[in-house]
Image 1: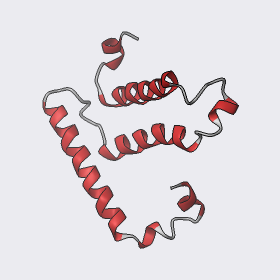
Image 2: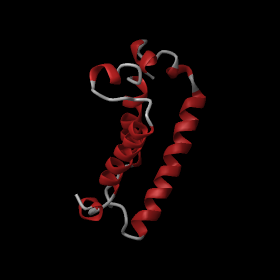
Image 3: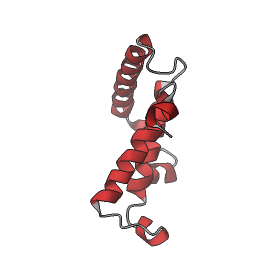
Length: 108
């Protein structure tokens, strides 16, 4: 997406398949969220589009910057503990977005 943004989306604009894939993905996310809302697990005002964008943003930052994170921050990015930290951060922040009382639930 980064290079496509640099070209102002000219190639994505031509793709019907891209819209179909993302529409199906959003429908699946909406279905999952609706199921969780039935059981009062997820916040009632959660937007499936925002959930998708935020998960992509969280994971994407690590992917896009994988070669420079170790230069900018004091991290050893190829270690299992660093990868586990990424997973944990994305998981926790996604839960904060979705759940009613995630802070009390996680003990933070």
